[in-house]
Image 1: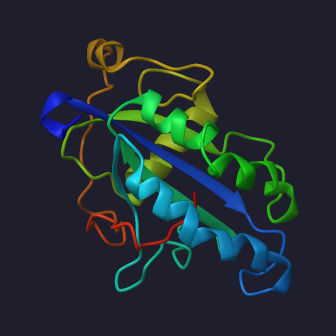
Image 2 (image 1 turned 45 degrees about the vertical axis):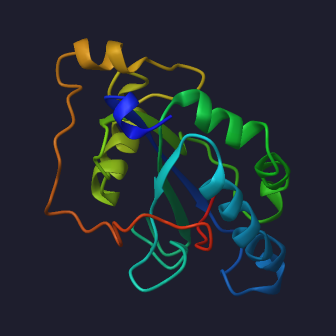
Length: 184
């Protein structure tokens, strides 16, 4: 389905706190999976965009949430497309092994929200949505798979309308290609 077929896309941010430095051999098996998993995401039905660091092939060097926290920010045509990639593809095997590389989160580490088709969210916007979810729980502005809202519900909710924050650095806004890698 094309972007024109949807007036809103689903943005997602997830954060993961590394157990060891990114270049530590104990994280190598995760790093080795970045290229194939991101190639799968890039070619997945419904994929729109993902954050990559300027001049790099991935976003693992960006640390806007702390020196030991990596971020994954992407946009999908639908919630179903993101779900299918996350839980019905090779990505699931990486998720099953996450405790080898990342700390267990005691607060929300994933947030979803609707954006107008064509909008590329900034890292600042994404971190604001995660903070909102952590502080106030799920709402049409910031939710999870388990407590989701449709784009129509979000559009009807006061204050759910997206406001771009041009003052927030976001890394590259170029679309990722199948050869790019990022945290998934």
